[in-house]
Amino acid sequence: MSAGDEQVQTESLRVVRGNPDDAELAALTVVLAGLGSGEEPQAEPPVRSRWADRAALVRAPLRPGQGAWRASALPR
Image 1 (cartoon, one colour):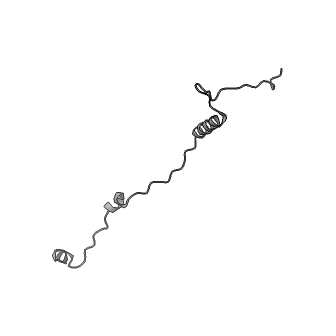
Image 2 (cartoon, helix red, strand yellow):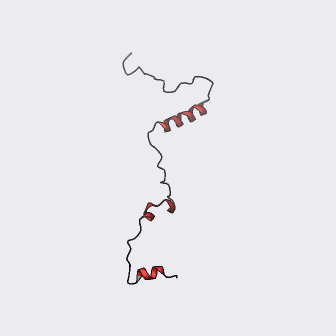
Image 3 (tube, helix red, strand yellow):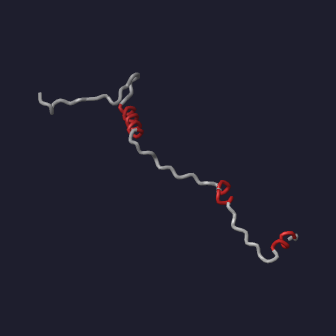
């Protein structure tokens, strides 16, 4: 026997209890292969509410005009 004739088989999946059919083993293999692929699904970033917008806390600079203090006390 040459080295090319030998096939080394390793157990990557072992059924401990029960008798799964070929379709169940195939489904389990696909799920486990998907978990081990290392690729995470790219989720859409959550849409932030306008209530949570921190830019609303920063107000525009005040630019008082002529007579602005007097006009601020008058009723509209």
